[in-house]
Image (cartoon, rainbow, N blue to C red; front, side, top):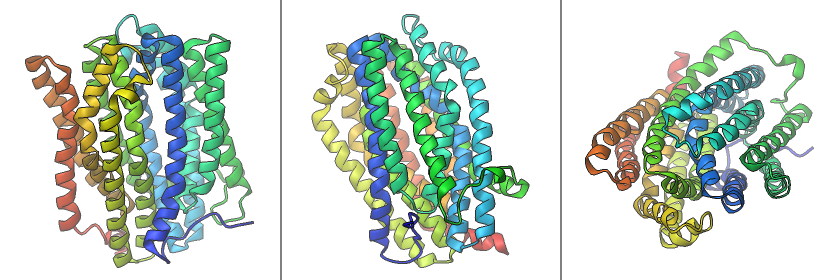
Length: 450
């Protein structure tokens, strides 16, 4: 059987990074395409109220899922570290503890999501004409939380050992299934937004099963054995210590985004629809960021685990530059094509105007967004997840919420809500740049052994 993992501790840095990031890019592209297809199909067949309901729930879903997924990401850092160090005993323990954690958190999210959805949507100021649709979509989505968390955890295991190809194949399959089911459920079965949510859950289940089957059947040292899936106390503590800062970081960002969404909701259904369409377009700008971020975290974790410090710095620099340049190129293209892109989701001139305005405010600053996430990815791979947590808590939560609380009542325009993103991207990038060049993040694992 061909070996699917990649050891990033030897060979051409640029070649390894690109070969690893490319499948991730196309995998994320498939995921974004089917997320966009959801919005396109919902908007075209069910109207702007349904599009607003589906789009506006994204911040709530992110808020509830991000904490547990962030903690689970700590497992990926540990797995890449032990894989790079060729410590198979600890690698085995890290893999099975990560899977056990995913099962437990997936079940917990199912309960929390279905119970808390109406309450949180009301706190967000969701309009009454959108509320029933938003509750239906979100509850069905959270009913399938286990499939989403399991897929992300299993994909994280595979990516931590350098396997970006298999998750791409599995995601491509589930993406095609999702689009087909969207059309069948919405157009032919008239299942409404509930049909869109059910299509997503089924497609996530397929990708999770395929990943699980791959890890059960592989002959490599990171193979999953069902009878070995359990919590190993010391390994769980280590995973949580690495992952909790990322989980908290994601949660505070999710909370800030809920506050932002509540401000958007105050401007009505057309604003929710237009900015919801923008969020789908913005997802494409995240593709190079996400791809190189995962590559960066894996590269840094493996190389620091192997004691390759100079190589780690060279790889980090290359990954950061690639992510920033690609994100900015996409931002320029989005800026120029904004009316056409937003118009794909809705035919309402008012909704299109809201979406185009946000593109024109945010798109040219995607380089800052990429820089912040890339620095954060490097630091997570180095075991310094607390630093990104503090930065994101300060700038993407406290500053973002404070700015909205002060500025929106004064200016009473949605442009203020849109400008909060470039502002906080700039502040976090300045902080990360200073820390990256001044702090000793490179010897974290070495200090732990002392």
